[in-house]
Length: 370
Image 1 (tube, one colour):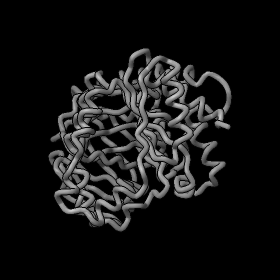
Image 2 (image 1 turned 60 degrees about the vertical axis):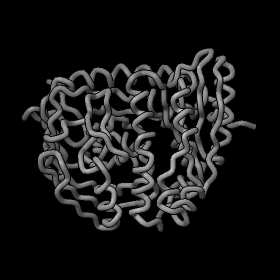
Image 3 (image 1 turned 180 degrees about the vertical axis):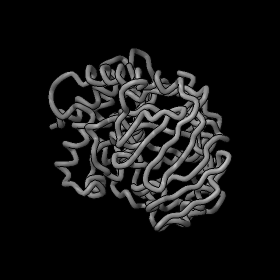
């Protein structure tokens, strides 16, 4: 028997997030462990007259490639992937890890090489998304491994995931996300008038130029769950220092207590309590030493760190900053195979100034201008 919460999530994604209609070519991409959601998505697409297909990923393939593959094999990207991406009207990526630390022992340079090899494919995907040619949404299917990372039982983690998406109980989740879109849209319009942000917190004093950049509302159309506003800062105007209190996780590798120093938009100093070699390897990847995103996490229903960036970047009262690729729809110009989100917790002794005016304190926007 299918979990009704899974069915509600599939309907929400197919209807509200992707707005599938007759004739759409849509792909559902995820691990085999996510088969209940992949099947429900397939059914929801069929009911709307779309033309769906499923790509179920086998666990362990990337680990084998990085362990045994030659440089040429790591560099290889199937031309089928490019043809498929160009043919799609819509795509759902389902993150469902059976082993969230599968790449922990992989050599950092080979991981970086594998990421760089898929750079053009990532740019093609984001280019089509930014141009409005491809509707994409990313979501999660709860697994034991993900529950363990969050230090929760599987049952509790399921309630957390489905609750964050507003499909835990019967109702109208699309109405919730439509209302969220209105609230976040107003916040994004206010921020679009700002020229400079200054972020102050624990071991943090960072200035970012954002003049002329567009703030984008993340309201359930790109991620489910969602709840943030973001932009791409000016590539040469990030100055100062920042500390990320939560571990920074990328491609299954964890780096603890990251501290970065910026000058003229680039990372000029980087430290970590653990995983520093991996941090340095990724920073050396083309374009990764420049910020591609600055964002406010505004989903106050997500209040805990779970080691899953889909949820953690939306924690109400935090900001996240991504090294690497920027967003064309926000005006971002940095191109990179890396987009690594790192979270700065501002819920205690955190402040944000907009053009010199205090507008945000301890995880909340203040009244007045904002």
